[in-house]
Length: 88
Image 1 (cartoon, helix red, strand yellow):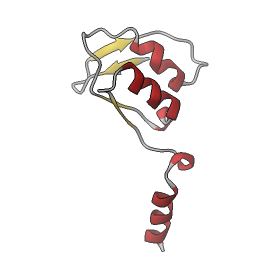
Image 2 (image 1 turned 120 degrees about the vertical axis):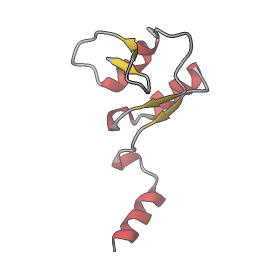
Image 3 (image 1 turned 90 degrees about the vertical axis):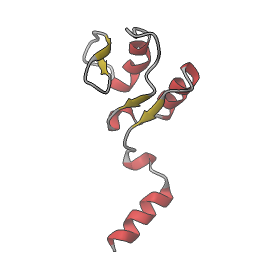
Image 4 (image 1 turned 60 degrees about the vertical axis):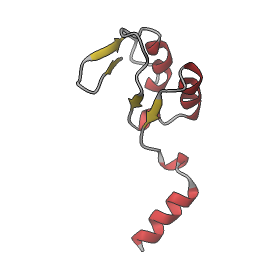
């Protein structure tokens, strides 16, 4: 797993097996940070939509903001209802 900065330069890298879910690799990967401070924003895809991961990121460094799309099951019901209303 590699984490890149906004310019595409790697700030963390770690080799892992292919079997663990990526969301489980974020926390151990962040322990190998190659720069002196945590990133302000971490952007991930739907695989990173995890409330436990969000809590870990907040606990490790309250300045890191996770940004990722929400999966269908984790979207607030009001947003889903609004989307369905807009489609009608």
